[in-house]
Image (cartoon, rainbow, N blue to C red; front, side, top):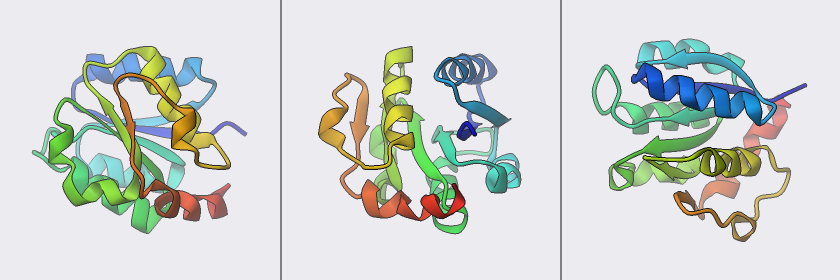
Length: 145
């Protein structure tokens, strides 16, 4: 069964580009959400979430990521032009893809998200920053597999 991915992005063209990259990586996109309400409505159906920080309802991305990870055991990857805005929410995420991104960067982040073992040194792609706290942050997701 392919991993199920939620894309939390309010710019539809960016969301569609990410959707194509996710599908090309062999994963299933279960929803595109433009705000907190839509993202949390899809939370129980996803394994991985690609989350922008600034959405239709404001700078809610970090809070969404924290809730997805802590309450729903979703593996979170932030996708943003403003990585400094992530703050403490980085503790629950695998890493951050910096906008503008390319397909290789998103693919590398997804590869890490589906890996059984977390080895950030194995992923060296410009534009992707793995977070050191990630191993403890997403191991609970294995219970959903």
